[in-house]
Amino acid sequence: MNELAMKLKQFTRFRRSASWRSRRLAAIISVALMLVCALPASALQARLTPTSPKLGDTISVTVSESTPGVQPSVTFQDKRYQAFPMGNGIFRALLPTTPLDTPGRKTVVVDDGQEQRNLAVQLGKRSFPTQRIWLPPGKDGIEGSDYEFDRMDALKATVTPEKLWNGPFKRPAAGGVTSVFGVRRYYNGVFANDYYHRGVDYGGGTGAPVYAPAAGRIALVGREREGFEIHGNSVGIDHGQGVISIMIHLSRIDVQEGQMVKPGQKIGAIGATGAVTGPHLHWGLYVNNKAVDPVAWRFDGVK
Image (tube, rainbow, N blue to C red):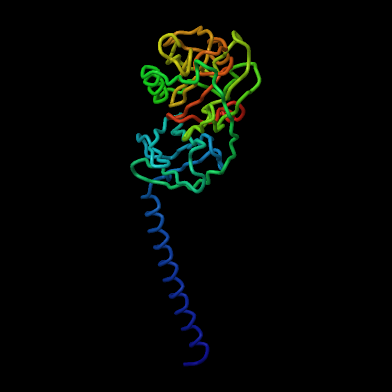
């Protein structure tokens, strides 16, 4: 066989080999595409806000691309939270953190029955001041009534599916802040274990107006004369989806249970009822039965 014939034979073998490799590659790509098409169009997605929360913050978990017709659940610190539909296939759950929690790495588990995602979050430390409170004679021995505690417990545990608020919360009183959220306290010289100040206090004289911080339904009206010995005259507002405002120590109440209120609507007046040292408004904000810092809700807002 001459040299030209040998080169023609080698070229023919190469073409056959290249053609076979091309067909094989095309077949592999075709199978891969079929496998991809057989998978769900999208995977479960979840996002945490804020990305670097600190003790007392509310963590918002937004879930999208979940299994159609399935309401996802969210688990955080061994407790399961309900995720509510927000429209366009998006769900949202609110996770409370408190000054009594342990800072550090936490895991948020999102599950829609078909898929599960584990999201890592670093819960940051935060320093809280300590106060010494001296209750005047006649109020230093108040223990509260079962009626008061039962009604308050039921209010804090309220979770209605409808979201009633919209945008940042408003300031509930015009006076300056006299005590911030999370303060640890001594009462008449005795340290209150497992206690933190579950809200923000606003100063003001008796009779100064108190406003609804956001839209909601009046879920509780409690009066000192009816057994609200510690909280005094109180109003509880259900903002929906486990978010509750509690306004206590009022001198006057201007709303009724079941009434719907708008942001900034007057609901009562500052007073000194219950276990207090003087007139002020205590505004507590509860998310899924735990008191969180209201400040972020006022300035950043939780949509």
